[in-house]
Length: 478
Image 1: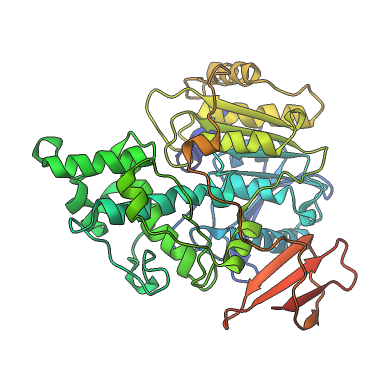
Image 2: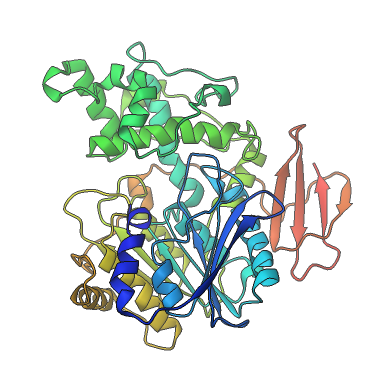
């Protein structure tokens, strides 16, 4: 992935720029997340802080989180850069906004108060960056740089639950996956998730643990020695998810088993509450429609999942967003850009795809990544809104300065609708966010906007209704 592999290249490319001494800080916030901070020596309070958001990591959080591939360039341009490890692994959206808020508090104590925040990240980090622009704790947010974000939020996981439940039908008796406790047997128990998984895009690592997958599909065998039944089952599962690349099929199965199970089972996430529905979903296959598990969501689990994970586009009218996507991504599909384009006014969003010849997840060249960043800087600074052609021109200029290309921004690529790629669901059964529940009220002083919900150990929910700034906001147990 671009955001994991090119930090050294950025530093080398911009070595020609005048050197900037920097101050570095690291440590832990009160809630346990680790942080890294880098600040140019000439940075002053009131200047801009870039808050870098890493992508999904299945390993437990550790010290010294990366400041991203553009850190050296951003420091040379006068920005401070900070990053949190988050306190959660995997789908960390349940805590990431609070972890970033704690990091911002630490930054203010160590360095000074920034005048503006620019969130920047890729994959899951791209979605977290977008959601930070909706959160008043980070205002003002003049710009967001979001690469290959799963902007559909909770809907992005409908791909995983469909693949997981279809597997049970297609592979029945030919490579059954372990079952977990009721009422969500399709989710592994936490003790059954391998402890040494870290990168769910590592096919070799996944296939060491997903033995039933190979028994069913032969995906780890040379094609010539797969039997006809294996080939048929593999083709059916890949077609279900619009997947053409076998490596991506294995990765998607990793998410549909291990990441999905962690999401549902982990006590710091949904704590055994099912947010998913397959009621009424048409799989365009009589056998699947007749035999796939028809599951109904637990309303509070669905509400909590939506509130933590969905981007609603409720950003300041002054916020400018650049989002870039690889055209053949089969993990975070390009249709997520369709969701983003419907969530934000076109005057606030430049959404651009690079034209791939083979599929990657977030596989931008160095020059393409730099182009998006430089276009956002110029736009926030008062330049006209960049078009896709402008990103291509900026990319070519970066190549001329020595950045690795090629440049593949292409305005002619058509982005499909999300519902054409992921089967629609029936309307949500979650309570409306403004619905009133009976129960005892509790005073609290949390700051925020809208509604927050905590799942308690007794499976009750503590729902907080917020106004901003807080003035005796209140929550209640239901």
